Every structure is written in C-alpha cells, then in structure tokens.
Amino acid sequence: MNDKLYYQQEGSGAIRAWALGAMLEGAGWAVTGIIGFAAIYGLIWLVGQFLPEQSKQAPPPNVTGALVQPLTVETA
Image (cartoon, rainbow, N blue to C red; front, side, top):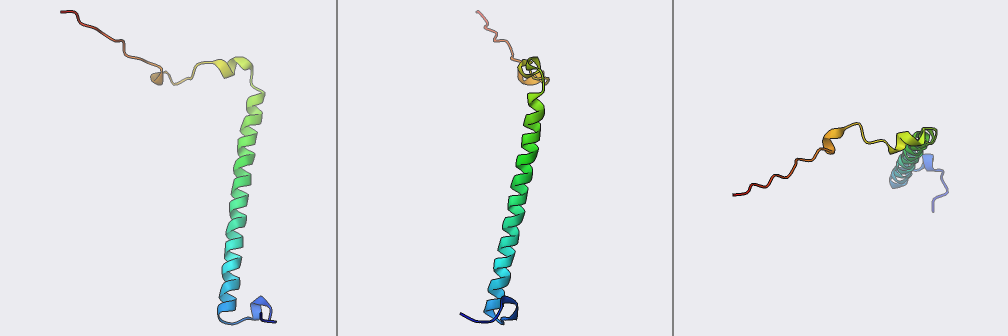
C-alpha cells in the first residue's frame, strides 16, 4: 500500500479513489430516491387510512373497463 493520502496519489491510485467516490455518491443518491419514494408511498397510505370505508368499496370511476358487450346468439 501507499502511505500517501488519496488526494496526493498519482496515476491509477487517484483514478481508483475518484471511481470509488463516484460509486458511493451514486449509491447515496439511490438510497435517497428509495427513501423518498417510500415516504411518498407511506404518506398516500396514511391518507387512505383516514378515508371512510365506503369509499374504499366503491366501484371505480372509470366505467369503460367494466362494460361488457352482451353475447348474442343467432338461431337459424
């Protein structure tokens, strides 16, 4: 090993230190994003717990998915 600090190194040691720093920064951003997504999801869930039970059992407002074409059978 080299006794120099990472910012005093030259060549491949400096490149390795920079790459490690970039990877750790990316991991930090990923953790921040995951925690942010979990916080938003948790907030939506928490608001949903305060809604009345009837609103949770109501049919969806978009009824086009629930429409079914009747089956017609022709007799000859």
